[in-house]
Length: 100
Image (cartoon, rainbow, N blue to C red; front, side, top):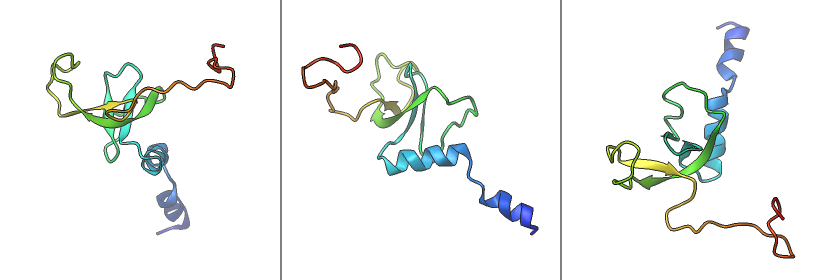
């Protein structure tokens, strides 16, 4: 193996960097912001589409009714863990840091 081939084998892809980040931070995968698409660690971006607008998330069971795939899937990637309440950060004076 040439030095260049060895160097190429050591390069890390963006998908590998994202997968390492997700794993290190306890996430199960990625989801599109609209929630219509999701993929799990180990099989990130199987569609080979752009994923620059995806966000980290957690695996949850398919909700069945209301599912964008008509309940024909075993899981979804959600923005928060099942049972986790949405948290809104506030400043010391009780206002939201972005909206005031």
